[in-house]
Length: 268
Image (cartoon, rainbow, N blue to C red; front, side, top):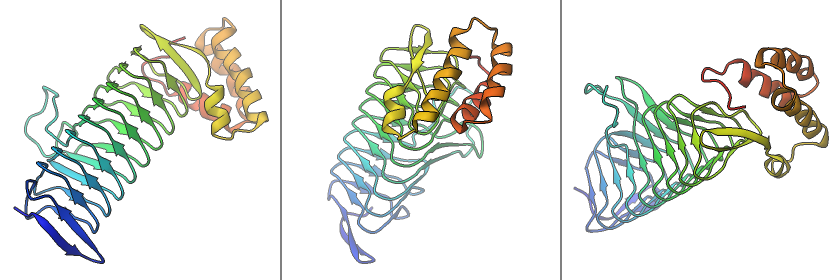
């Protein structure tokens, strides 16, 4: 058990006297551990990360720099997947993530598998990230948002509060899911989806504007949206038409590749 302040490089590691930190846990310089928190021996925490009060970080978990974990978060606890048979699995968290109150994040299920969270993400209070998920960068998972196993959130995706995402679903870049939605199929990049089950309704024009997409790219995406979601074509025929449009627009090409590789289908 370690407590108090320790010198690590040029900055102190600060551990509250009531926290329990295994002597084998690796804490980078400037790490702070709040009251009544628990950090296990196989955990590695990067520089300047703040662990708040009553946080539990366990399992084979590696955390990058400048993250912040708020009260009651449970990070790296054993997967809830009933297929778990006791193997070692992992959780990797990148840099500058904000993990709010009572968030739960599980590692992978099978031996050697992992759950991965990238950089600059915001997981709001009571959010849950299940086994084998991949969250990329600059995403938001709002209050009580739930990701089932093997879900992928691509860059800048936003999941509204009280929404649930089914196993193996992919949410594309800059996609926005409305609050209280039930997402059982893939949501393509740049789209807004909502409902029970969630269906695509429009382009995420505000997200595109904030991400500084050009007028030309937004115009190309509007045309692509009409082709896929408003033309009345079957998905196969819509993809054939979209492929013709994709050459002149990187964003349309990204949309085409996502649709072409979808395994769960698209909520049209």
